[in-house]
Length: 190
Image 1 (cartoon, rainbow, N blue to C red):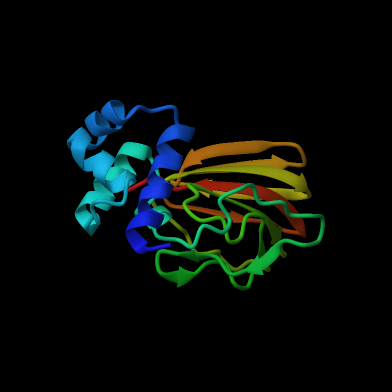
Image 2 (image 1 turned 45 degrees about the horizontal axis):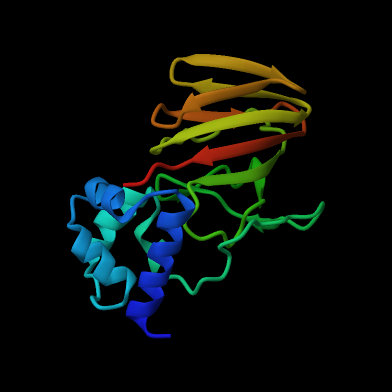
């Protein structure tokens, strides 16, 4: 399948999944119906500017159109199978001494949310670095107790407690003993 066929097929699938007509998508993207139809029928190869407009109109990331098609379905992560990863915030490794991250949706292209289990170690009195980035976060304490510094406020959370907040405000999550947190970060489309 050629590049234009692949992009056109992906665009049509996404449009139909979202229940949009060509006319509705054209209005959302501020493009003509003819341009959209030509792309979907592989008669036109869109440039990056058009791909960006299409992505906004479909509420997906531009790279969604050019990935290899794998990972378009759900991501199943069985107990103990999450991908252990390092979290990067503000261009730096975030909390490397205090926490490990287990990604629950590794490899999901075009996603807006990043779910993971955060296993926190005792902070030993060291101050955790503050993080801030676009988007929103939700944390749910699975085990132990955590302290969330959010701007000028501090929240103490116990097992079963949750906190939902805007990520643009500087924040950190620490514990005085071991704790485990389910966290979901939402990143808006640029």
